[in-house]
Length: 230
Image: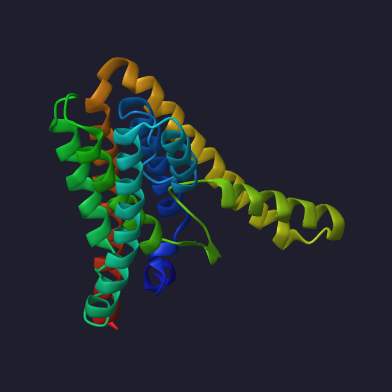
């Protein structure tokens, strides 16, 4: 019962790990299927943008710029939703998950000939919403759509543990290494499935987002019922 009454259900470990798996899955999908563009890894996109400019690859450069702008718009949209909806409803975080689900379904239905400019920026938008809405796991800040920060924190905590023998640092390191593993696993599974299903592979991400949405919604419902019964 105490777990259900926790005011921070969105921080649950299983939710964070599942979303990080999905983040790796979608980044690998867009990189392979959509011209080497990353839906969430904007650091990589900025590097690729610089290369496109140097090589005078205008279509590629425009796609990268639009993707970065889509990511920024997703972050902004979450803050707007949080400001207007959070005070009235605890279900507001579900909007980012449902939005991601719908975009993934739509992208999977589009033919491969549809330009990357049409496909990747909407995915960047919903990935930004996902990582902004779910930015904490068991009390630790993290990213569920890219992994550099998680890897840095995992290594830093492990180094701190080796110096101090502080068990809290070991637990922290374990959480972040789990996140890195899930991101890598999601990317690997995506790459393998694309060998079979190509552009339709994104529907797997839609199914996973649907599962996380149902699970998180169920937890919120159980918590509201528990409060009502008190």
